[in-house]
Amino acid sequence: MNERATTGPELSAARSVLERLPPALHDINDRLARAFTAAGHELYLVGGVVRDLLLGRPVTDLDYTTSAQPEETKRLGQAAGADSIYTVGEAFGTIGLVFAGVVVEITTYRTEWYPTADRRPAVRFGRSLLEDLARRDFTVNAMAVHAVTGELVDPYGGLRDLERRVIRAVGDPRERFREDPLRMLRAARFAAQLGFDVETETREAMRELAAELQRVSVERIAMELDRLLVAPEPDRGLEFLRETGLLPFVLPELVPLAEDVADRRHKDVWRHTLLVVRQSPPRLAVRWAALLHDAAKPMTRTVDEQGEVHFFGHEVKGAELARKALRRLRQEKALVERVARLVELHLRPAAYDETWTDSAVRRLMVEAGDLLEDLLDLVAADVTSARAWRRREARARIERLRAHIRRLEEEAALAQIKSPLDGNELMAIFGLPPGRWIAKVKNYLRDLVIEGELAPGDKETARILAERWLAEHPEVIESARERTGRR
Ligand code: ATP
Ligand code: MG
Image (cartoon, rainbow, N blue to C red; front, side, top):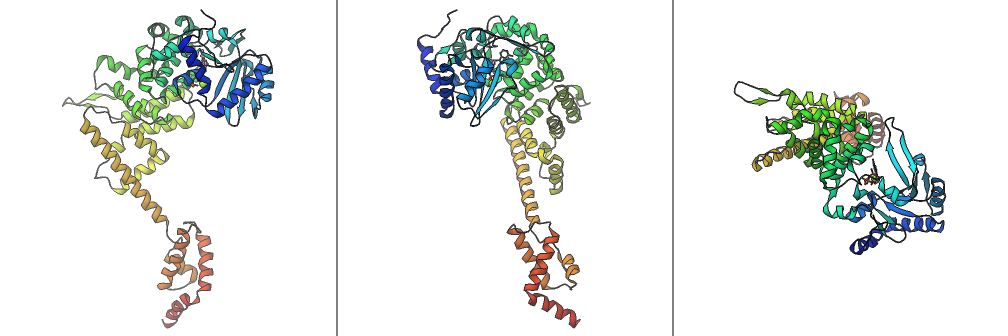
């Protein structure tokens, strides 16, 4: 393989890579390039940042690989004007630098990096850029760009694979996946993020080695799954997991659903699920809920005498399943609860129609609490009928529910805008009978609430203000006293 595999059209692509950096990043790159070159070190942009620049995707942080040792990198980073430095990754050769909010990671050339069975990463520093690129997972992630010259180093045909839109392992895929089985899941994640296919041999190796994924810690698996789910084409990644047989080792809870595709017993819940995930907004809790919302359908399926299929209680069973799956993946407690609750509630808004009273809608609002937005988005995505009129009708129903909720919210907000003290309270405070004075005091207090000078529930302050105002307006009270006297 040619050490400098950049020719003709590739070189012109390479030249423009540095120019594609947004100005702030371009400036940081210049400063680092000068500092490292002056010290006689090599510095290359590498991995995802090169891939994304070539694809024209937005880039917000910078990743470099260098011949400098971490100690030296710290010194040079400071010389280049970094605001702060973090060293949590130093044992793996990574120094983090922050320049005006931009995160830059610079890693010393490595030859090996994959967590061993006991989860301690095995790291060996390498001697050259090419050694470093050789240990990376996929060709599109194994390119580097010289920080000074902009020269593209692409020993594995990453640029060609970017053009063909394929994920291909660097070298022998079996070897790569045995070294670090997480790479198989990463292939699915990149397919979902980039909308790429996975090259045949790489795909075959995944089918063969799927079970190896059991060696990988759940934390690493969960992190890749999260990234896959919020990607632009999560359905592509998920279907790929099913096809290659990775699913049982990643999300065993979904296997019954996925097997459904093969025997087509009931309306293809798997394809429906993928579509709901795809249609839902890319927020983590919503996407997880979309993935799990029908997961309990296979085990709750019944057929009645008329031959109709039911899934009684699948939302409750599904919530249990969601909790189990997300706990197993050691997801954060707040996310686990959020997703489980969304699954549990997912049928409620879909049942909305004109017979729902205000109190029925209010009950849903209170039960959903801060999940309401997520819930409505989930339910809107949960409309995948093949018939256009059905989809239109279902969407219109959810829109009407949204409008109903908005109206109740506005009414509730308006109901807040009133005097904190009512007539009875005012009479008790001032020891006066009913009369026009009450309306006058209440109007005065309500205006203060409207102006934001008095909180709607602040009776204490309201009392003090009312007393002061009445003292300043004796005529209001006088008429009330006269009437008392007359009685
Ligand atoms: P993103 O933009 O989504 O972060 P990325 O390509 O930067 O994508 P990271 O997981 O941040 O992905 O990894 C950075 C780079 O490190 C990759 O591009 C790849 O070259 C290399 N890499 C990361 N994880 C592995 C791994 N498990 N095996 C081999 N190489 C890896
Ligand atoms: Mg990255």
